[in-house]
Length: 109
Image (cartoon, rainbow, N blue to C red; front, side, top):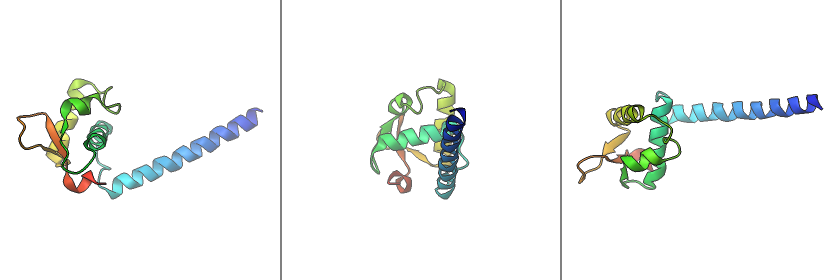
């Protein structure tokens, strides 16, 4: 019985390894492999919330997303600033602050 459970666990670990390897490869292909885990979570939350190219997403919406809800406030803002500096997020026109767009060529990805 213990051998069967161990084999199942090893099988799941193998699948997890394969998924993680594919994810890293995809991140590299789209140029996101240099982001920190917090930057990645903030970026993916913004992307998920934006829905389509050109759709504005607020900092509060991003902050409340499941991917970012556990990030400390200061770390969240550092990641957000970094994404702006990298050009992955852009400040939305027509708003004083706290509203962003995912870069057009990445929004539909």
